[in-house]
Image 1 (cartoon, helix red, strand yellow):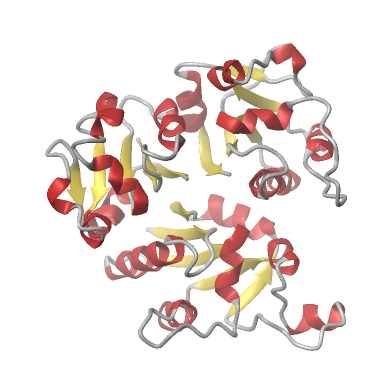
Image 2 (cartoon, rainbow over the protein chains, first blue to last red):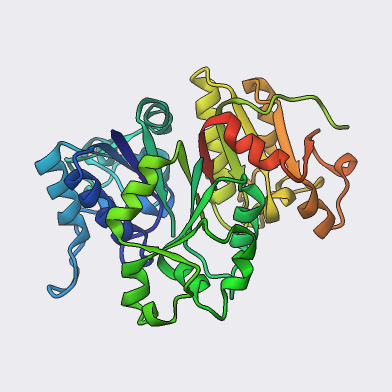
Length: 130
Length: 96
Length: 125
């Protein structure tokens, strides 16, 4: 089956990101396709490229990147939710006159329309909220 | 059949009430994260009306040291079983 | 005040959070508006504390926070007229359907589960 996940919890603040990752790796191991993970609400913080968790804790940012590298899962971040919270890619940083950027590929800023598309295009959309 | 997913315990959140109000007669409810506290024998009365359709995620129970206190009426699944429940359902709805 | 509205469609957005205290309500409404703009048939269910989204007389916050009352007025422009409000939640807050900002159909008993079953995708906020 084709799956997508909606993640709405900030990393390390709630269990949502951990639960989503665990579910993601398990469904792929069961032979399903994970088309995309869409980050909304505080979930957009998962895309913060400067995250530096202690070495003895799960590195969520790297785990999302691995998911993309190994399974081609898209990592889509709601642009409206991200910009409000200081998460900008290079293009948006330039557009808003900011000196640095906080989001980079494989995470991509995208519109909410992508979530709606996913919801109708995949077999299962599972939400992980804080 | 819809799989409802609840991550809040009935001891501190009324999210379970909204979830139960939205459940049809053959829907299932899976307790995850802090929601697994609802699976304890002392708490499970809140889910009496869906007995036999109440599931709890094993790793969230065991991480909290609660697996031994999970009520016998609750169907305990591992994360593989979680995925399997989503396969069997037409769709999932999360309550938080 | 109750209007006839279908209990089926592409997307059901369940709104369970009141205005101003968090961004859940606004972000849920945004998802509904975008889906409608994409041509999907969208229904809204105001449930639990979310029924307060329909209270009359809402204002902007002291720092100019926009709130969501103005967004509700845009729903009809997006052809979102399948609005449902949970009866027990209305009673809990002593509200009556005729006091609401927008006309919404009373959802009671089995009608909530019928709404969920009747939509291909259900998102909760």
